[in-house]
Image 1 (tube, rainbow, N blue to C red):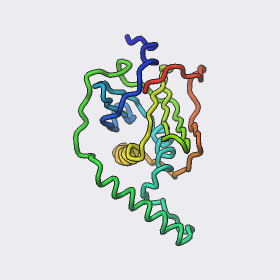
Image 2 (tube, rainbow, N blue to C red; image 1 turned 90 degrees about the vertical axis):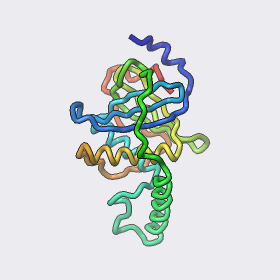
Image 3 (cartoon, rainbow, N blue to C red; image 1 turned 90 degrees about the horizontal axis):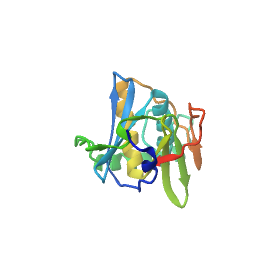
Image 4 (cartoon, rainbow, N blue to C red; image 1 turned 180 degrees about the vertical axis):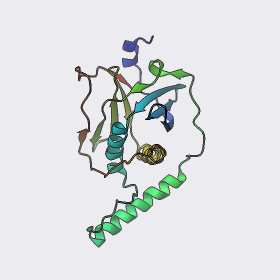
Amino acid sequence: MTDKSALVAKPEVAIQQVNLSYSAEQDRLLLRVGLADNSELLVWLTYRMTKQLWQLLNGETHMPTATSIRLETFPNNAFEQFKQEMKVAETLQKMDFATEYQPHKVVVNDGAMLAISLVLVSDAEKPPTLEIPCLDGIAVRMNLTQELILALCNMLQLSSKEAAWELGAITHSSSKTQVSTPMTADADVKKVLH
């Protein structure tokens, strides 16, 4: 059993790899985050969490979707959005989605944690941060770059298609957005993994 108090003090570690895959047996997505210290985080995402993660992150990316430009959009706005979507498509083409994920030797917290909430904190002075409180009272915190957001959104689309899940319409986030309420009585998450 892992001493959870030791996880609180864990310093921030760079992300080397990210993988998102569908488990038909669990009917969930497994988010695997390979870290530079040769450890990895495993977080289960339910359908509800997946939809909410998509809404939080895709609102930040301008990723092209079938409903991203609507008929009622003014031509100038549609053209600007199209240009943004072209930049996103060019960036995605430069990313490596073909290399197979290499599992790390050490799994933080002795296994996968179940996400119960999502919080995206956006600040004009700092990059956005995604916090994923989990059922065991531990939260995973990821500092997001534009490339990481795009990679996660692309993997969300692919994994959701495999799971036959509908991600839904895009909502735009505010400076701090919490999109679900914790399922536990203790809403204060005291342990944070970076």
